Image (cartoon, rainbow, N blue to C red; front, side, top):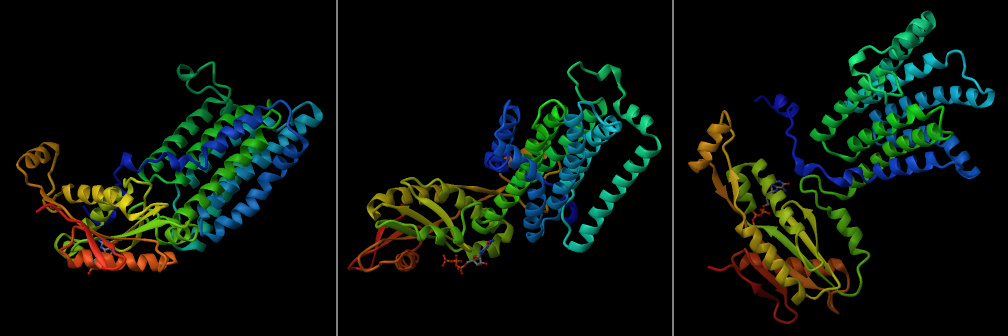
Length: 439
Ligand SMILES: Nc1nc2c(ncn2[C@@H]2O[C@H](COP(=O)(O)OP(=O)(O)OP(=O)(O)O)[C@@H](O)[C@H]2O)c(=O)[nH]1
């Protein structure tokens, strides 16, 4: 498969779907449901929700721009334009007790254009050339708005009727409080955003999906519930900004390859340690040789595997990727004796794990051939081992950096002792062997 095609055809990996992707959006959706349904909202919250969409457009938009996230800037813009146009209608209705002459046309146009543009910008990934990308997005928004405006002015009644019409009587349900066409557009938008999330699970794609659900709930309530428009528009915009912040945090503190917290997260944690703690440095054995023999991609897979085993370490330990093929285990409030059994369990699990390797060039043409080959052991198995050096805070090593140095020395001893073992930084005798593989 050509590499460009291979990039396009992404495999959906259920293991990559995480509830944490929805952490920045689902609570906001629930909060919006609750706030919008409250019969009375305090003056403070009414004022807040009146200014929040504009604030989020300006501050959130500037924040997204600073991170080069044009996609979210346009999503915020689309949401704001929809909010603004509906707000004019709702204000008029509230002040005069009747809707404006163009209310039906504007409402139905927004019901169709909002989910359509939301999904379009949501699925439109950023290109590297910022100015061109922004221009293309702005032109699309201008073109769609201009066509809608021109048609609406020229044939106001015809367009409103066509949008509100029941196009497929067999598919119509009594529960449909919006025009039939709106549900169709929402369905297509939802599927597009769902596929995008499944192919590339990340907080932003999750937030887009949740935001669309919020919009679908909001539209029928706009003229019925006093605060539905302000509250839900604000919350959907907030979801997007929060998802950008969530991803920015992940970029800074998470290692992309293994998903473990990275060096920056470790440094930050080291500053908040109490008096007693244990630090272990973990290094994959002969990894250079492994990379040279099986290739960098398989090397990456091995690092993911090692990370997944280290993540399971017990005894209150936490794993970090220190850099390259080196990892760190941190045990706050523990002594070396308490930690070693847990480290030993991880070392053993890594040693015993067998990874299936298949030659890319001779991939099976179909499932049957794949099964036959697996039965015939055509796939070769590989395994790796790790060495560990461990040290605890002593009177002589006051800072975490000094403890890391000691753990590094112990790791060096573990390598010198034949690898696949754990060594502890001894107080008087230098590094001492605390575990070794069975021969
Ligand atoms: N695939 C892959 N390789 C990496 C990554 N980071 C570092 N490496 C490789 O890790 C290897 C580190 O090798 P060395 O430090 O020489 O040591 P080693 O081969 O592990 O041998 P010992 O530590 O002595 O057991 C180098 O070949 C790096 O290119 C990564 O993210 N992915």
